[in-house]
Image (cartoon, rainbow, N blue to C red; front, top):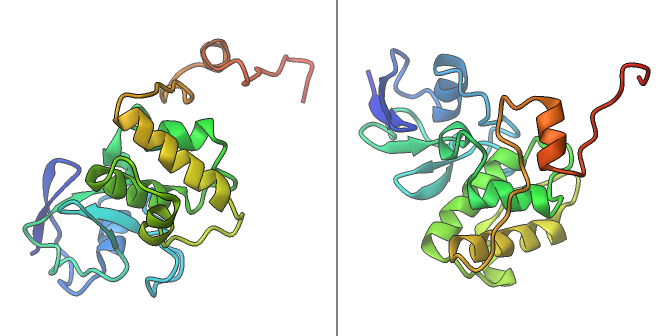
Length: 183
């Protein structure tokens, strides 16, 4: 039974060792932020960080992940305070959101190695496909997240999970709470 550390916690999967890490995370660990997109490693929706490297979890078996440290979108920052998460919201680089977790994970791994990437370095390091076409905003968001990581800028765009709609609207003025008579 393959053992690894997922989001800081030791886990052991009672599954076939050739099971893709994607399915172990989603089905056994209930970490559904890691998305299934293509199953062939082309889209990047299933990107996770393994020992500091952004990897497509559909291409890594749990046997290959044994003994390694895996971080999913759920383990990046529970309160959505990671600079990439904040910058993605601030730059409006999220459309439908399906590809977002994989992009955030790839960007996080990039910024851990290079907090001031060029546009070309970002385009190389973020191979993810986005059907909504947020690429120009994505580059701006990652560069902005780098400035935040270097402490050159601050962002407070995304309210923490579990916050009431009224409190979120006070913290982020662009949000509006619908009134009872509105649908």
